Length: 252
Figure: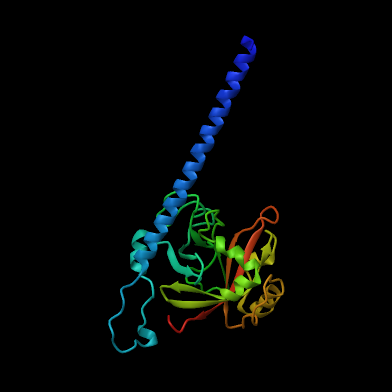
């Protein structure tokens, strides 16, 4: 091998080793963030659980206490507005609300930077979920955490097994009855938060007509709507949205 060829060969080897080292570092960093994110939210779940209430007469509706320890969660971050869960899935997280829709995109509930970010309420929405429609966002993570399970609602069988969720707030607990799920682009009307309570029945019926699964009746005028959103990959900036009606839970 000539000196020139040997120099080229060594240079290529050096570049290849550098690329391999960088790729290895990226993989290790990603796995470390996945693990840290999972550990952080596991701690938040443990922190949020209230001790069992002593056996006594049932509390009246006015005296009922929140089902989560929001005081403990607020001690970590006062931006916590709710706890969202879907039984039988991995979706079981606190919901935060930041000053805009970028703040918690890559920040955990603790405020630490992490690729998993947080489950967060649209900054334009009422923190008490009192608006006719509220939107909650979360990442579709490759390790199956955060809102990854939302895309499973593209299948009828998954909806049939998980038709409801739970939204726990400081003011009370709501059952989420899912009625529509579909892929939307950035110009879709699902992102329009200007609709009024009177608009909801017609709008909800329209959204139900676009659903990829078959469900029960569309929400009534008295229901509030919760939209859960995560990334999908059918086209650029595709989002899978899952819509549900909020009704006060008898357990809340």
